[in-house]
Length: 516
Image 1: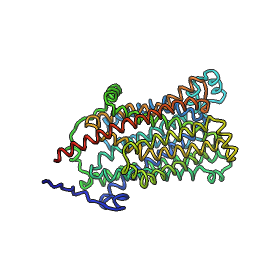
Image 2: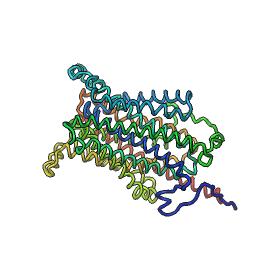
Image 3: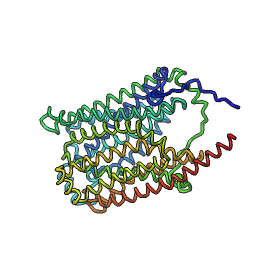
Image 4: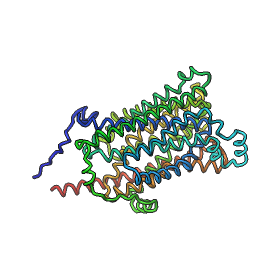
């Protein structure tokens, strides 16, 4: 008979304390600054994400997003990873953080200062029209060049999300947070992330909405001040993040109660090599489970991208070039996304995960996106449906498409953050150790990249093929791809559920036999 000894730093919480705040008082010195670093980085990400869309959609059009994501963001991200690897070899861990964050803040600060004069730096309208007329199939690339400063802002804003949050923050958190702490800290980080979404969304709406615009002679003049204020907020929150990071190195990482460097040294120093693209493909193709999980990732990325581009096009039409109005709307959308994710996660999503089978929990995300996408696409290119609804409700078609698309994407994102991410990770649990480690890395390489680039590749190819910039024109073809992707997604969930169930039953039997 054996007894389990409970670690000294673990104390059972009960009731609402266990659900909402499972943090010990003495842990606040470590938890709070780390949480606020994440808050600041995500605050900036939301501001930058919504401002970049407002700049690009209201100048180059929503179609340019597909070209930017595929042909600019992807190469820039690869270049960033190479540069980051060089920095980690040359500088200390702490210094790398400052070396990465500072150039971004300098760029965004300078962008705000020179924004009123950017029209002088962009090519003339006449020269761009000539290029469009001469090379209609390259319109997407021409638009990137026509507004190259906005394009550069878009690329760096995209990299901020993956570099600062996915890489810098989580590397630091995984380095200093103990395993026993992570089970309690990491869930709250997700809540704090969505709270930052709500605050940044509110700031966007405050500094770019109609109430703000009324103090200026024109909407464009108001937007120039909005960019100045919003980028100022980005710089301030970035500096706060660096100050907190420095404070933790001075006060927290020097106290063995919170962080013991010896524990890091004692960990097995196995070098976890991330598989190459070819090795990843081979591993996925030889494991049915990994292949199905990769399909889930790719299907989500492609399907939501196809819907979002059409929605952002309608949003751009609705605001008619009003960058401030567009940004304010996206601010409200971000606020509602954060609020919905928190409420859905606390009161609905967690109960679904606990009470229903893996299949029933996993199938909700593809079903929601499939149904929502079908409704939205039909509304976009079906004149009969549009005419009926606009005449019966009195709402303009563009306005109806804008708010319908916002509701569908918002609902999809909230469900994705809680159910899709959780069930995807649960699917790895029954797998063997090699598939959990190398396999997960392989899926991230193939599924992650293909999911992000797949929708952009589909739409950019359609733009080039039909020599058009009209997003609505390619909607029927994009919908056909969307339907195939969603059908594949649903099929993959069904097949994977049987494998997860059988593996779980096998694992349970093995545990029972070992125990007996």
